[in-house]
Amino acid sequence: MQTDIDPRSLIGRKAYDRNGHKIGTVDEVYLDDATGAPEWAAVRTGLFSRDAFVPLEPSTLVDETLRVPYDRALIKDAPDFGVGRHLSPEQELQLYHHYGLDIAAPDPGPPPSDRDFGRLAGGDI
Image (cartoon, rainbow, N blue to C red; front, side):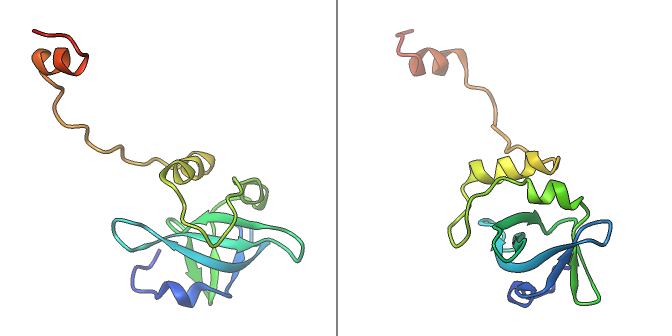
């Protein structure tokens, strides 16, 4: 998605799936904790429905609307975490898996030496 767009300007825009079917209206935008970049949009899917989270990458803005490259059925079946609250890392992971997106796992660093492992396990070496 374009990175120079103010996330607040997305709120209220209509959202459409990859086939051009209307999903709903962007209700909220969630920023990445580390980068501050817009990462997820909560889209109100109907008058009495709920908000569905959609990834903003690889979504695009076309003619003042948000185009989400997924089918409406998949979007409406996304995990429901409610809106107005922070997404936990576990919730984000569920959303990534739901949409089949790959996320880079953090580098765990070098493995501990045998001596460190023994100490961590509680044994004396």
